[in-house]
Image (cartoon, rainbow, N blue to C red):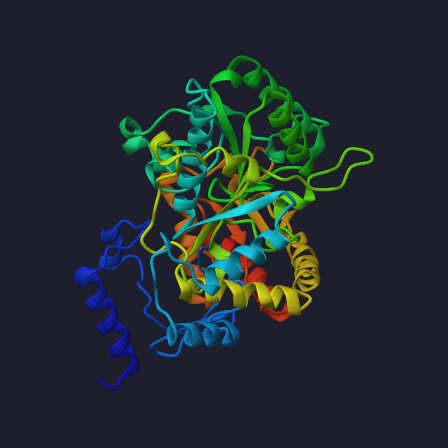
Length: 462
């Protein structure tokens, strides 16, 4: 079969015979929603069997940092695969896992000294939740068995991670299987009252959190937060003031702080880790150190699944003891610390080390900010916002009132299809459109992303 168009159709038909896709109503792929077979990647672009090119404006679910088929990462994967594919990490070790742990400790916020590996972001959150709970159990506080999470949060699809998420779309069906967290109001700066700044919102929400801790600290293991940007919750953003205040409250009430940087880590917000931006008190360094730092997605440059949880020596020491004490952390994943995935992560971190990546992100962020300015006056756009190389806006019926479209109208889906027809991958979260491109994108590609977005708005509201 040599006809590219026929090959595209053949690949789609083979897929639909067996593959069950994530976050998808599969019935829509019977004809109303195109399924696009990708045959290769080229930097910021994806290419299908017909040779059509799609600019990946969302980094393939926020994971791809340095471009598809990045040669440095690909070479590291190939080299490691020729030496060692895998060995269990129980009772064994290998150079890629220990070298990656050393490198993560070197670049992470100070005080994070221990690294636990898993396979994906949700698994990392599960480890952090279980480790925090188990810490308090080992420390003699078995009554601590609850978690405080933020409204509008999302931390993954496994049951523990979903329990501390606050999006009904994902939680509703599984409610009977989940534990109930204590939910604190989000510091989302779009919730500002008249005259409030983002810092003011953060301070008000810290007051709300203090009230919750005053009532519940003795039964609480940890507060879990997505620093600076609640991504799956609609790219809602908050002031760094909140992070600094959150760390102080966790210290004051002696509860753990879990920072879920799965989506925002590795430069997305303009610093290697979002926690680095926490506003300091006078005379103190900028940034905070959480008790647990969850990483995935960009950890391998988006090339392979891998996640890590960094924790403190204080946490680690609580699990040491005689075998008979049964206080070890008995949580495992078959592919924890997989050598090939670790090699990809080391190559990705080496790019940060050897090239001015963060400076380049700053330049791209400035260009994106300049280009999205034109959206602020659009009559069907509300809440234009940006943190680093993450920007977003909401499609609305009327800007003045902020009236949202009815969910059944699927305006975001219309937007997605129109953008695809123009060769750009922008997959909204409901009616929230966001830009989250790979770092290899250039300024003309950013211009294309925004130009197609503007054009797609027109097609969406028609």
